[in-house]
Length: 324
Image 1: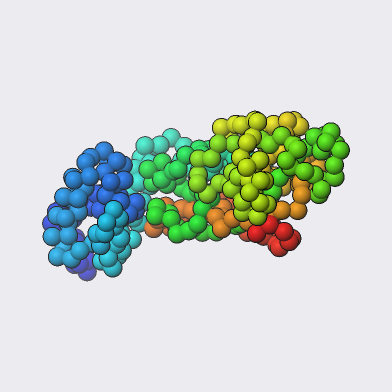
Image 2: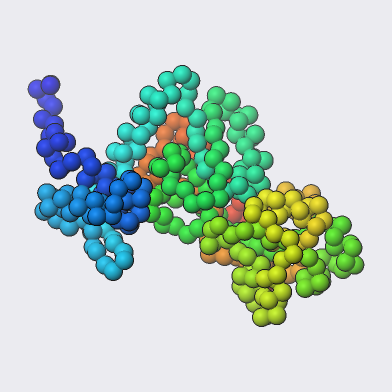
């Protein structure tokens, strides 16, 4: 050791165990002892014991324990922030070691709809500028955890802050009914005056509570109880939104459209907006990275490009009247 370097305190001496730090990091990130136990594959009691041992060793409480929920104390916040950064660095090194042959790809997560309808049509522009950067897209409608699923970043629909992630950029969106020109022509109405109650509605399964259904959209648009009841009955249903959009393009019915996702289809006239009602939910598309992570190198380049793309999408947030 250099004479000018201070002595390094052994981690084994500084903390009761690495298991205690791991249990605390998971519980602090998820704000749940139960969820942390599921992630770590242990019992909730084991997580609680590890955290209690850590608190006893430090001499301060790390969590405020309330009925069915916990929150971090100032000491817990300080430790959580530092641990998240440290664990992220360890994971990065481990991934580098696991993939010694060739560069590791930048991994981005998104729902199937965001991946297929928004990200992939734009990805060629980034790859043309940075052919040396490998990209891995993980499309999944189920809730993801960035560290658990080894994602460098994700586009998540919701409202920040998030327990496991920091938000780098966000953009809102608006929802409205859309249909193919051929379907509208068959019903003999102009798009702005079409009667939705006479047309077949297409719906998609809702995985994220933030997603709108026909019934919740009609209620938010203040269309009245009769319209809400009609909207709740869709004769054609899919488990993925992308398939519902494909069916609308084929003229099978009316789908609930999101401007940011369907912009290309709308501009090219493949789909038309029906009526004047618009709903702008409080949830937003958020570019997120693991909590405490500091993107650098190629990860930072891709994150910067995604941030700029989302900022361009914010032009959809202009007030056009109608809806909420």
